[in-house]
Length: 476
Image (tube, rainbow, N blue to C red; front, side, top):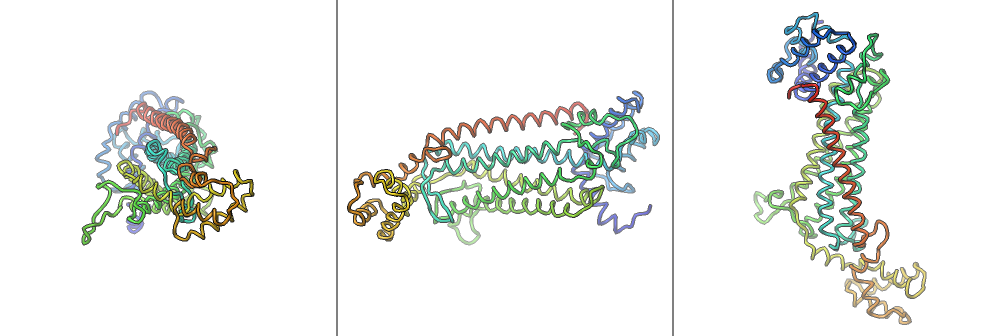
């Protein structure tokens, strides 16, 4: 059929350019694996297998990358034309036995996606490792915890960071689950109903580094949740990152003064010489928002499309998925690098943890424990004392106000002052998940063990994919 030049310009040429950049290696690996499988089943003779593998090995990938589309419809046909030139149409055509562009396309999409999911998991892991390093250094670094964007109670920086490490662990778990479902082979599904030839789908899957089959042939072609699940996990991770970065940007303001970025991650103003703009964190925020938007776009493109072989889930969707992974990885890598050289002002954080009546909860708790009154009464009494202090939030003023409001209290001045001490506040919260140093050290030890397991898993998957590729003998 004769293609319309407009169709070529708007559809085929952009797809060809993208496929050369992102899918060429995977397509050649699929050709190698399928050829070997056909030979293992006697569908190709050993001599035919040898000639086809040699022809594949002789392809000049650099030249293919630099070549225009020409008369070929897509990258698949461009490679097929080159193989026909190398070993003849009859033999090159045998390679296409028991397969279709449909299962080839979905397979190379999955091969690209699994690498990007793995790269994203590693980026999450690296950020989490950096946060764990920070937590280890700041187990007793006091800071004000906020609720509703208002100072609420004293905490420690380690307690805060371990909360971030927990959501990063969950992000890693979601992405690992996505990897497990992406890394299943559709090869052998052919157009959508497999083939009448006695092929070995599991053999092809192993050669390509897959950990199982996308078994039902209809679903292997028609299902798109391998990428929508990944997009969902990316979207959740980017929401988490965005919330963290919002705090870090606030901490970087002169008004807060908690966090100071290294010189390499700030920029000066073109007109205001004094400025240290925390631009790296701003870029992290916009990249995370961009990745989330791209993930939503992936889901939007897949929504309300037929359950079958359809272009909506194929060539036009793949650049969007690639952009999503790229934006997410850039955000994660930049945040990791930014935090690796940043510093916190411990004294300022501790000073703010002792202001604004942040220990009032513990004063109320102390009244319950020592005076035997109910918490609601203690809450009301402390709230009245806080109001009586006005803007004077030092412990002595609060102690005096409380004594004036309830002279009958048995609490000594020293007991009141101890209850208002921010480090005491942290240390008495010595239960599971609390900020007490003992609990924080326990949580940190568990988190570090989880981190080692995650890093081991990443290495195992990289070894699996690298080993499969090396066994196929496909060049870079």
